[in-house]
Amino acid sequence: MRLGSETNMRSNELSMQEKFEGWIAEHNEYFRTVGSMQITYQREVRVSEISRIADFLLKQENKLINVELKTNPSMILMQQLIDHSHYCDYSFALVPDFCLIPRWFIEKMTEKGFGLIIYNYRKEIFTEALPAFVNKERDIKVKKKYIGKFKTEQLKLIM
Image 1 (cartoon, helix red, strand yellow):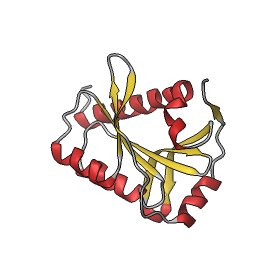
Image 2 (tube, rainbow, N blue to C red):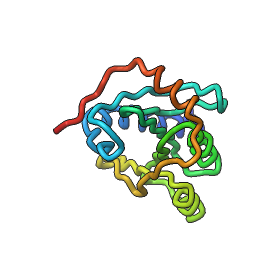
Image 3 (spheres, one colour):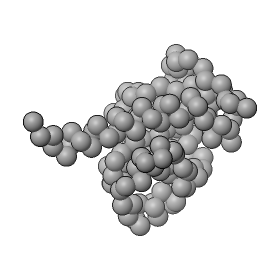
Image 4 (spheres, rainbow, N blue to C red):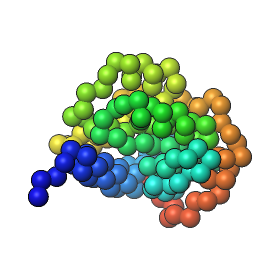
């Protein structure tokens, strides 16, 4: 059986999700700049207010961080980031190092204040290529709703 590109790309996304989840647990001092010393996260969170599923929602004190994973930067990824920015404090795109990142995508990320994380498959490391800035227009009611829904284990930063 030959897998199509859709299946291969989806399995790459799932692999990146699993690696990112492990990275959060091992190296979450990366998020030290956005709040306290504890991070909780949920994977694949349905956000009914925007009719989307967040790949990762991270909570640090009262800050909500969205991370969207894609194997290819596209207008679809950009729209997901824009939608999630309506209730999250910070938004990040996570893409692998083997894809080409178009100039328009970097310019739009910079304009919107979204962060960019690159995953190096060979070395299995994550690098922040663009820092994220606080999303300006947030719906505080929706944000509080999702902060209140966190039921996952608490992760402590490595000192």
